[in-house]
Image (cartoon, rainbow, N blue to C red; front, side, top):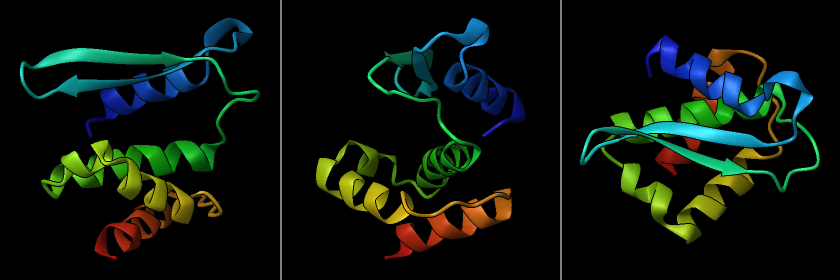
Length: 104
């Protein structure tokens, strides 16, 4: 994922002005267009660890040609369940955690 996209995701997950709404941005493949999902049901902002994990999960799944897994509720629930307890503080730690989830 390009650094400009990561910056857009991070800015969206931490709303400016102290707002409570969050969003996720992506580029859809067919047709190529920007897409934003907004949600406001969370009681707190996402942590750095959670942000690193979601960016890495989307990136690795896409690069592996497995982006369709993100649309499978059972697979996604399992992946998130395995990643949720983890608290990576570096890109490498997040990359390794997600790689393990994608492998198994």
